[in-house]
Length: 598
Image (cartoon, rainbow, N blue to C red; front, top):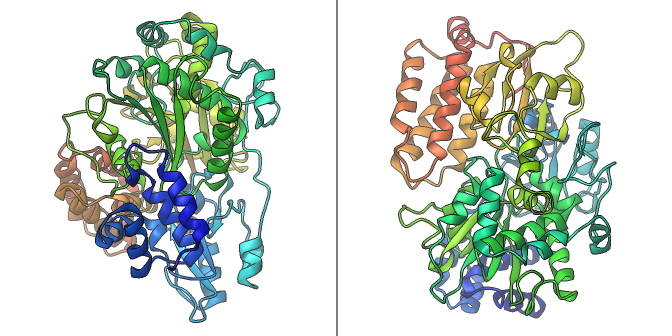
């Protein structure tokens, strides 16, 4: 036996939480990799026996997820090289580590002591550059000197810890309800109850599920995970009860570059999230909720898992759950580094212990979701909005939002990139980009101006610097041909090469495509190759036509929206900043010598 008896016991205990054992497969693979250092045929055999699967089935699942396919080493130095971290010098960190260890990123030293891996967004965009060693808590705001210290010994790198910096605030004049005030962390049940916690679920218990749905509809709450679909309307699509189980699937897999809000909720106010999950569960008359959290969020996973256990210990969850008068369960599952699992049906596949490839629809999750049962899919922040809506009412929630009909309530705006005070700010929808950048995030370096802003995560179309008086809400951003997305705002100053920004975005989508649809698999690759050629100084005018044709080839033609997001992003880059692309092609080199390294 390769794995210890203790690991076998943990896996078998986890299996008990799921209608089908396979729901615990990713958890089992994490445990196996942490104990053995890497996954191999012997582990696939052993894990397969536990789950009554064939070894090839386990290997197929493991092959899909980046976390399970890193080089074997005592200390794996994973450096985020997506846009927010690159804007703050991540590429220098990688090159310094390569020089010091004498290896290239993606490989390990011959003695197996160290490996370097470039990873996509780690969801800590305000604190870049960021390194994660193995599956330890993040090391944030990394300097070249600190990174050099990590390679003195693998034991030292594995033991390295830095307190997570406070990056989320409630600005003056805002009555927050998502984040605790004054930098506090309400990590105990007593903290949360002392501040009014679990009053909302008690109030919701006196309402019929249909009345809860009507209240959330009236409040105008829209999903905070990127698509912005009305939450109450989504709940109303649930199939009628038929005597079988019904589920809530909660998406805490935020992996969109520029997006780092859900981590702040889970690490600072986990019980508001869990109370919101309970309210959503009651609204759809669910039997259980399953939270899918990105695999890199080890601290958030630990905090939320411990909070869930506390709710069971106190009788708030379990046989007579508060607000239900019957059994209601919440469980949490770790992902393994695949952005596509943020797509709702890809997430459901992963939650069931399979490759996270999106499903063809119909049927939609509300009819056939988790384990083929009716399922509502909601985002972490969306659920966290619910206690305030129940406690204060729909009219209050609408008054707290933008002066437009479809952008109600607060959201957590994440501002990263070329600003002095990057971070998360709890604000009403409708704040202007200019206010976010200058009033809250401290503006840019002296003498620099805003060249570009991505307003809602890297898949949302980019805006020019002369568009920063746009309010950040659903309606206003549509008027300037962009979208709110996840409210992850990435700011770039006048030194920035937009070809390089487009290249990083295209690389991300190529890496994260599940490969299921031809248009996405091939289109993301073509965009990345074409942009790479332009960035190297080998581009020609025809490449701009090719880029546009490729985007048209991808739009609206795939099972999920990953290809759409890639094409929206790419098309906006060469539409809004065509001069940058033309200058690259004409000069056969980057015309922005001060730009970040891609």
